[in-house]
Amino acid sequence: MEKKRLFLLMFTLLQAFFASTTCQPYLGVNYGEMADNLPPPQETANLLASTNFYKLRLYNANHSIIQSMAGTGISLVLGVSNGDIPSLATNPLAATNWVSTNLLPFYPATSFYSVSVGNEALNSSDPSLSSLILPAMRNLRAAISVTSAADVKVSTVHSMVILSQSEPPSSGAFHSDLIQFLAPILDFLSQTGSPFMINPYPYFAYTSDPQAETLAFCLFQPNPGRFDPGSGITYSNMFDAQVDAVRAALKTAGYPGVDVVVAETGWPYRGDEGEVGASLENARAYNGNLVAHLKGMVQPVETYIFALYDEDLKPGPLSERSFGLFHPNLTPIYDAGLLKSTQPGSLPAPSSTNPGGEALKPGNCSSEMAGELVCGEPAVQNLPNAAVGRRELLTRPHPVWQWLLRWLTWLTLVLAY
Image (cartoon, rainbow, N blue to C red; front, top):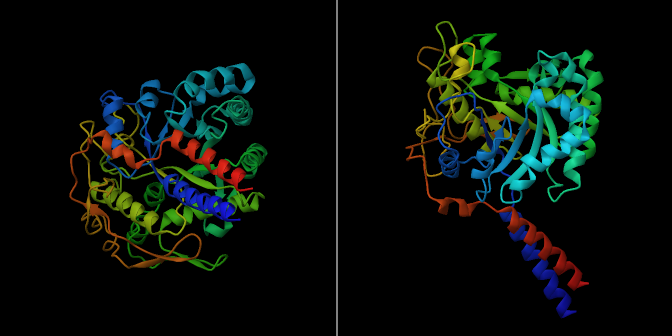
């Protein structure tokens, strides 16, 4: 009996240690590569080690970047380009080769959270992709499931335009003409425990309604709030409202249990003349207040900020090339409280040229997505140099340690009985 108690105690301690070292941080960042001035991958790895980002989303399988993340504990969302979807959908061998080439050579030294099949492919300029997304996801999942990386999830990323309605959030619904494609994708996600990935941008909501109250609502700043009669929730910010609209659409479609992951969100810090709201002050306010808001939530939604660097080769208006958080020399473009060693300070003030009210103060409570009250926390300031030594990486659990802890836990249970 004493021996059994001892083993049970060991099991409890292992479980506690395992939980403390394998938590799933909720904050990630997107790494777009449409640029000709990006720093070497190893410098980016060092930069990420100095930040509060624990996940990195790539839009393609860049081997140099994947390799540079080995041993960092940063978990990757590995992207499949829209152009690769047809071959992966029609040829299972192509999916096997993709996994063998882009994932397995780096696993488990590099941690992978999921594979993302395409980006906003359901609403791309190529309508033929709509029916090919799910077959590609299935083939990749089948290829991954027979490997040592079987726990890597497979999903796809959508834009908010897949919603036919989002206001109020409780009335959220998918476009009826997309249900024929979305329903089987949702069933796949539900069966495999994979997330529904979405790109909400309050910035674009503001550009379509450039009013002072809308700006404050989008920047997490004090505002009258927006009441949803369907749920009884008064929303204090656009981010929560958009995410809840997606959750309502999932519920209406019959899949309320599928988790939502915010694959992209951000705010440009500059724009062409006439691009309303694109300013450094507003970008700092949005991203800084977003991080503080997520930190204060009981169950924060996993969120990837767009983007780590500017992409100077992107077409379109200047704002499209101005979502970056860091310069190519690894210094911050503005302070959004993203570096580990920053000290608490006040939240960013609103733009002097764009009305939006005062910044959210510590202790200012607002209704969050689950209907609970959470309080705003200050963003942080006093930014240090970006690059850091590998000693910072000791704070991140390595996949090998995670596997060892699982093995020891099961061994303890077997010995106990």
